[in-house]
Length: 200
Image 1 (cartoon, helix red, strand yellow):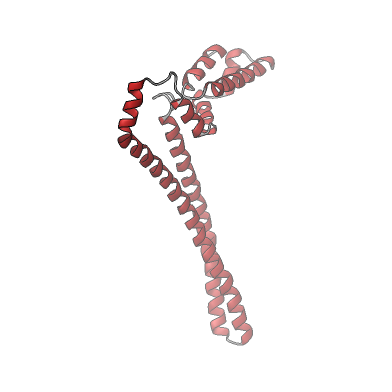
Image 2 (image 1 turned 180 degrees about the horizontal axis):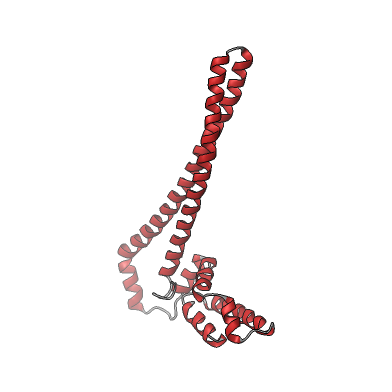
Protein backbone atom coordinates (compact mmCIF):
# COMPACT_ATOMS: atom_id res chain seq x y z
CA UNK A 1 0.00 0.00 0.00
CA UNK A 2 1.40 3.39 -0.92
CA UNK A 3 1.03 6.65 0.99
CA UNK A 4 -1.90 7.95 -1.09
CA UNK A 5 -3.89 4.71 -0.63
CA UNK A 6 -3.12 4.66 3.11
CA UNK A 7 -4.24 8.26 3.64
CA UNK A 8 -7.33 7.72 1.48
CA UNK A 9 -8.42 4.70 3.56
CA UNK A 10 -7.64 6.59 6.75
CA UNK A 11 -9.75 9.56 5.63
CA UNK A 12 -12.65 7.26 4.72
CA UNK A 13 -12.52 5.38 8.03
CA UNK A 14 -12.36 8.60 10.07
CA UNK A 15 -15.39 10.07 8.33
CA UNK A 16 -17.43 10.30 11.58
CA UNK A 17 -14.97 12.69 13.22
CA UNK A 18 -14.92 16.49 12.95
CA UNK A 19 -13.12 17.66 9.78
CA UNK A 20 -10.34 19.40 11.70
CA UNK A 21 -9.56 16.17 13.60
CA UNK A 22 -9.48 14.20 10.35
CA UNK A 23 -7.11 16.71 8.75
CA UNK A 24 -4.89 16.77 11.84
CA UNK A 25 -4.62 12.96 11.82
CA UNK A 26 -3.94 12.85 8.08
CA UNK A 27 -1.23 15.51 8.40
CA UNK A 28 0.32 13.66 11.32
CA UNK A 29 0.51 10.29 9.56
CA UNK A 30 1.58 11.88 6.28
CA UNK A 31 4.48 13.52 8.11
CA UNK A 32 5.45 10.23 9.80
CA UNK A 33 5.49 8.46 6.44
CA UNK A 34 7.56 11.27 4.92
CA UNK A 35 10.04 11.02 7.81
CA UNK A 36 10.42 7.27 7.23
CA UNK A 37 10.96 7.87 3.51
CA UNK A 38 13.64 10.46 4.31
CA UNK A 39 15.31 7.82 6.50
CA UNK A 40 15.71 5.64 3.39
CA UNK A 41 12.61 3.44 3.39
CA UNK A 42 10.47 2.94 0.33
CA UNK A 43 6.96 4.37 0.39
CA UNK A 44 5.42 0.92 0.97
CA UNK A 45 7.91 0.12 3.77
CA UNK A 46 7.22 3.49 5.39
CA UNK A 47 3.45 2.85 5.31
CA UNK A 48 3.96 -0.62 6.75
CA UNK A 49 6.13 0.78 9.56
CA UNK A 50 3.40 3.22 10.58
CA UNK A 51 1.27 0.26 11.65
CA UNK A 52 -2.11 -1.33 11.04
CA UNK A 53 -4.93 0.97 9.95
CA UNK A 54 -7.33 -0.77 12.35
CA UNK A 55 -5.03 -0.05 15.31
CA UNK A 56 -4.54 3.55 14.20
CA UNK A 57 -8.31 4.05 13.83
CA UNK A 58 -8.97 2.54 17.26
CA UNK A 59 -6.32 4.75 18.87
CA UNK A 60 -7.65 7.91 17.20
CA UNK A 61 -11.24 7.16 18.24
CA UNK A 62 -10.20 6.37 21.81
CA UNK A 63 -8.27 9.65 22.05
CA UNK A 64 -11.10 11.73 20.58
CA UNK A 65 -13.52 12.95 23.28
CA UNK A 66 -17.08 11.68 22.90
CA UNK A 67 -18.42 15.24 22.98
CA UNK A 68 -16.44 16.15 19.84
CA UNK A 69 -17.80 13.11 18.00
CA UNK A 70 -21.38 13.88 19.06
CA UNK A 71 -21.01 17.55 18.12
CA UNK A 72 -19.66 16.60 14.68
CA UNK A 73 -22.50 14.15 14.15
CA UNK A 74 -25.35 16.41 15.19
CA UNK A 75 -23.95 19.59 13.63
CA UNK A 76 -26.50 20.80 11.15
CA UNK A 77 -25.47 20.61 7.51
CA UNK A 78 -28.38 22.93 6.65
CA UNK A 79 -31.00 24.92 8.51
CA UNK A 80 -34.12 23.07 9.53
CA UNK A 81 -37.34 23.65 7.65
CA UNK A 82 -40.49 24.69 9.50
CA UNK A 83 -42.13 21.27 9.20
CA UNK A 84 -38.97 19.57 10.56
CA UNK A 85 -38.99 21.86 13.59
CA UNK A 86 -42.69 21.11 14.17
CA UNK A 87 -42.02 17.35 13.94
CA UNK A 88 -39.15 17.65 16.40
CA UNK A 89 -41.34 19.55 18.86
CA UNK A 90 -44.29 17.19 18.47
CA UNK A 91 -42.06 14.12 18.72
CA UNK A 92 -40.15 15.40 21.75
CA UNK A 93 -42.44 13.57 24.24
CA UNK A 94 -41.19 10.35 22.62
CA UNK A 95 -37.56 10.94 21.60
CA UNK A 96 -36.47 13.20 24.47
CA UNK A 97 -37.23 10.65 27.25
CA UNK A 98 -35.56 7.94 25.16
CA UNK A 99 -32.39 10.00 24.76
CA UNK A 100 -32.36 10.88 28.46
CA UNK A 101 -32.97 7.23 29.40
CA UNK A 102 -30.12 6.05 27.19
CA UNK A 103 -27.77 8.63 28.73
CA UNK A 104 -28.85 7.64 32.26
CA UNK A 105 -28.35 3.93 31.50
CA UNK A 106 -24.84 4.53 30.16
CA UNK A 107 -23.98 6.73 33.15
CA UNK A 108 -25.39 4.09 35.51
CA UNK A 109 -23.24 1.39 33.93
CA UNK A 110 -20.15 3.55 34.39
CA UNK A 111 -21.07 4.28 38.01
CA UNK A 112 -21.63 0.57 38.68
CA UNK A 113 -18.27 -0.34 37.11
CA UNK A 114 -16.40 2.20 39.21
CA UNK A 115 -18.41 1.23 42.32
CA UNK A 116 -17.28 -2.37 41.88
CA UNK A 117 -13.64 -1.26 41.72
CA UNK A 118 -14.02 0.96 44.82
CA UNK A 119 -15.81 -1.85 46.70
CA UNK A 120 -13.11 -4.39 45.87
CA UNK A 121 -10.36 -2.15 47.16
CA UNK A 122 -12.50 -1.27 50.18
CA UNK A 123 -12.54 -4.99 51.07
CA UNK A 124 -8.74 -5.15 50.80
CA UNK A 125 -8.32 -2.04 52.97
CA UNK A 126 -10.68 -3.39 55.63
CA UNK A 127 -8.89 -6.77 55.73
CA UNK A 128 -5.52 -4.98 55.90
CA UNK A 129 -6.82 -2.81 58.77
CA UNK A 130 -8.02 -5.96 60.54
CA UNK A 131 -4.56 -7.48 60.05
CA UNK A 132 -2.80 -4.45 61.53
CA UNK A 133 -5.16 -4.24 64.50
CA UNK A 134 -4.88 -8.02 65.05
CA UNK A 135 -1.08 -7.96 65.07
CA UNK A 136 -0.83 -4.93 67.35
CA UNK A 137 -3.67 -6.14 69.58
CA UNK A 138 -2.05 -9.57 69.88
CA UNK A 139 1.28 -7.96 70.69
CA UNK A 140 -0.39 -5.84 73.38
CA UNK A 141 -2.02 -8.96 74.88
CA UNK A 142 1.34 -10.77 74.88
CA UNK A 143 2.92 -7.88 76.77
CA UNK A 144 -0.02 -7.85 79.19
CA UNK A 145 0.64 -11.51 79.95
CA UNK A 146 -2.30 -13.07 78.10
CA UNK A 147 -0.15 -15.21 75.80
CA UNK A 148 -2.85 -17.54 74.42
CA UNK A 149 -5.20 -14.78 73.36
CA UNK A 150 -2.28 -12.67 72.11
CA UNK A 151 -0.89 -15.50 69.96
CA UNK A 152 -4.36 -16.24 68.57
CA UNK A 153 -4.96 -12.60 67.72
CA UNK A 154 -1.52 -12.25 66.11
CA UNK A 155 -2.17 -15.43 64.09
CA UNK A 156 -5.48 -14.04 62.86
CA UNK A 157 -3.70 -10.79 61.99
CA UNK A 158 -1.07 -12.66 59.96
CA UNK A 159 -3.76 -14.67 58.16
CA UNK A 160 -5.47 -11.37 57.30
CA UNK A 161 -2.15 -10.02 55.93
CA UNK A 162 -1.91 -13.01 53.58
CA UNK A 163 -5.56 -12.72 52.59
CA UNK A 164 -5.18 -8.99 51.89
CA UNK A 165 -2.15 -9.60 49.66
CA UNK A 166 -3.88 -12.41 47.72
CA UNK A 167 -7.07 -10.41 47.34
CA UNK A 168 -5.13 -7.33 46.21
CA UNK A 169 -3.45 -9.33 43.45
CA UNK A 170 -6.78 -10.79 42.32
CA UNK A 171 -8.63 -7.51 42.57
CA UNK A 172 -5.93 -5.76 40.50
CA UNK A 173 -6.70 -8.15 37.65
CA UNK A 174 -10.45 -7.69 38.08
CA UNK A 175 -10.05 -3.90 38.15
CA UNK A 176 -7.96 -4.03 34.98
CA UNK A 177 -10.69 -6.10 33.29
CA UNK A 178 -13.40 -3.68 34.43
CA UNK A 179 -11.35 -0.75 33.15
CA UNK A 180 -11.00 -2.45 29.74
CA UNK A 181 -14.73 -3.16 29.73
CA UNK A 182 -15.38 0.54 30.40
CA UNK A 183 -13.07 1.48 27.52
CA UNK A 184 -14.88 -0.90 25.18
CA UNK A 185 -18.23 0.52 26.27
CA UNK A 186 -17.02 4.05 25.54
CA UNK A 187 -15.60 2.91 22.19
CA UNK A 188 -18.94 1.27 21.34
CA UNK A 189 -20.80 4.48 22.17
CA UNK A 190 -18.41 6.45 19.95
CA UNK A 191 -19.01 3.95 17.15
CA UNK A 192 -22.75 4.69 17.34
CA UNK A 193 -22.01 8.25 16.25
CA UNK A 194 -19.84 7.43 13.25
CA UNK A 195 -20.84 5.86 9.97
CA UNK A 196 -21.88 2.25 10.41
CA UNK A 197 -19.18 -0.27 9.62
CA UNK A 198 -16.33 2.23 9.53
CA UNK A 199 -14.60 1.41 12.79
CA UNK A 200 -13.74 -2.19 13.59
